[in-house]
Length: 114
Image (cartoon, rainbow, N blue to C red; front, top):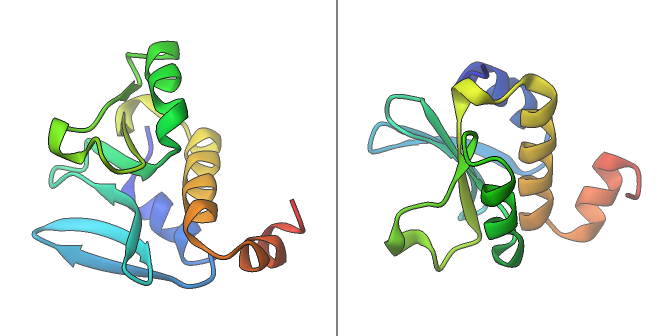
């Protein structure tokens, strides 16, 4: 199980990230683009994820991942149950979500040119 505090600790190390509390939900963003957000009760973590890959992700582990509500399907977004994630997996999801919203040179500088 992962917590908002674990994500916060990681997000603080990612350049250009800011944390916001919007309608009682913790959100991490770069500029105006949200790349990770938590449900009010912190049982669900939403994160940026390529639209073309999300069906496969959800199908691969439906007990862990699920699609956002219909009105959010237009966004590059997937949800995960926080109780089903471990820390290494959370780190990978958060870093990849962050990478989607920052310029490539910023990601390369932080991640070593991946």
